[in-house]
Image 1 (cartoon, helix red, strand yellow):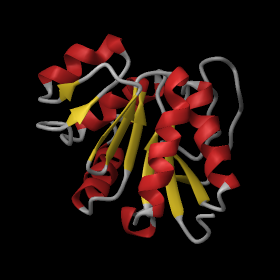
Image 2 (cartoon, one colour; image 1 turned 90 degrees about the vertical axis):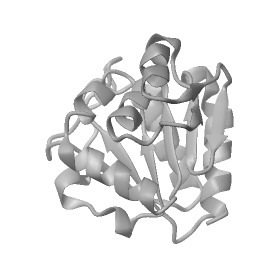
Image 3 (cartoon, helix red, strand yellow; image 1 turned 120 degrees about the vertical axis):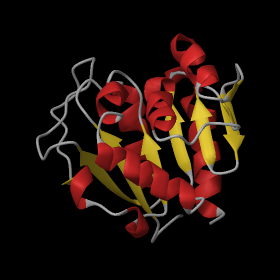
Image 4 (cartoon, rainbow, N blue to C red; image 1 turned 30 degrees about the vertical axis):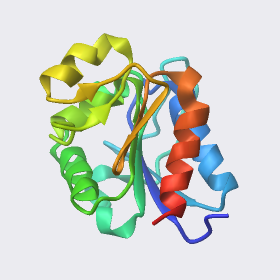
Length: 173
């Protein structure tokens, strides 16, 4: 059990339903306190219709120092999240403190915009492979890639190994 651990999960409309819901439920099963932070205080809805899912806070109201790790789900939400200066500041702060950052699918866009993938090994959905490579990542086609504090995965099919790696990183802190 990971009682006492605190994880921030970023959320925006059109998130990939399983990539947000599975980590939230899985982390809570392990006793982790999960905070869902949105761009606004309004509930968010998944691209496949799950929701509305209430958020606990806005990205402007949370501080990376209050959390042990970060999860960025994919879907179309990352395209909205990466435009938020508050989101990018949070991602940069988690990275500066070498706290685990898990991102999956299109969430690599958030990591790219935060400037944390250059020189790092990572994966993503194939659709943003060129974006990852152009941002300086060493992109590999593997179900889950761990490079230091960065834990990346390609698609919902890879969530098992991705969450296993993330839980291991969280327990190792």
